[in-house]
Image (cartoon, rainbow, N blue to C red):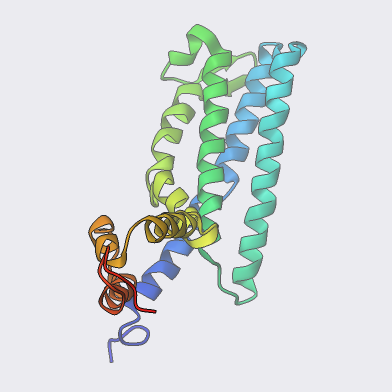
Length: 212
């Protein structure tokens, strides 16, 4: 009676919960707040007179806009009762790394004042430069590190790992007989290894004459 979900589907449920966690971490609010702090800092320091800074600021602004649009799409899927796929990992990567880039820009713009732990009082504006910077550092780690999220995207969305694996297998099959292929591929497990073993038993030994 205390069972949640179907038997033997625990990992499926866990992955669904992780998807919700990435939606939470991928919320654009942190980035939007940091971008607003950066704008106030830039206005106080007349940084918008610098064309190079203005170009970087506009890039950050567009990154946050794209993040918000992507977040709304995933949130819309959940609101309609749909399921989100592994591609939601991209949302976590985009949100946390955008947050870090914006806070790094804040520290750079503040110069010597960027190392102050307290809020900077610049005219009528208070800007928490260092607090934002420090708060952005662990964001790429919690909720599943961004390195893990990239692996998920590569394997489950882009199928990169499978493509590389197939290239390796084709090369091994072209160069070596089945009996040697098994020795060269200790990382292959499960059905793929079983298929290689069957092929090794069915084909003639390396160097043996072929009938017919």
